[in-house]
Length: 261
Image 1 (cartoon, helix red, strand yellow):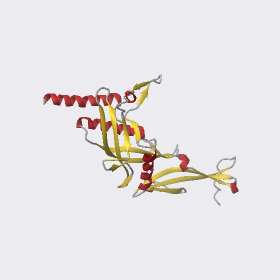
Image 2 (cartoon, rainbow, N blue to C red):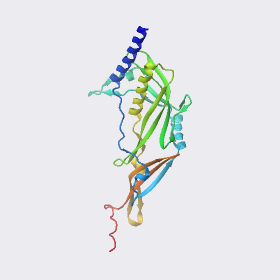
Image 3 (tube, helix red, strand yellow):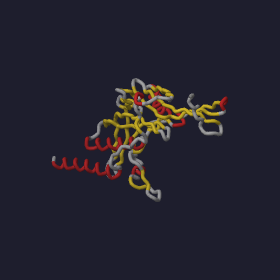
Image 4 (cartoon, rainbow, N blue to C red):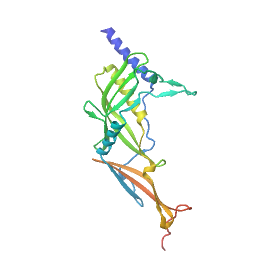
């Protein structure tokens, strides 16, 4: 019994050592902008607001098309780093373990859980189904599968005019795996999702910015996004707040007329 406990503790410590040596301390990739606020927090004085409404069916149809036409979403469990000469260093073993690729695969469905998007309690929730394998530098190939749940935060970057999303994993459930390895593998999967997926580019500035030619005035009406606010109920409503300006051909933006005396 004493020998078994020593062996178990050694396996756990060894796994943790491998994790910190080859993957590093877990960290969260920050969003490149401030998190979106609710529409009530926005001032709509002298601005125009367009509302884009997206429901669960839209997102789940989008994901279903990806799985159907492009296949499962796959990414490595560790990042392959290079040194100053461009040769692989650090976690290069990830690509050399051909018989046991260290990767996680997001599947469309597993164990009754379907990867998708849901709107629950004013939050964007993402159920996850996944599988994968991990090759220890010294030791067996670890195959795993499981389910989980994440939430998605939205953030707007005024400088780039982009709307970003960040997936925050709330919990993972690994099936039929020893407790000695389940915690370690869960850390790998969470880290992989954070580094390989985040931040998501939900909408680009080119999709939001407007430029409407006005031939009668020999100019162009431009609408630049000032802010994007998110409202989550049974649907996702994006309140896109615009600043409008007119640009004459060959000249700077036109100024508004002076007030009448």
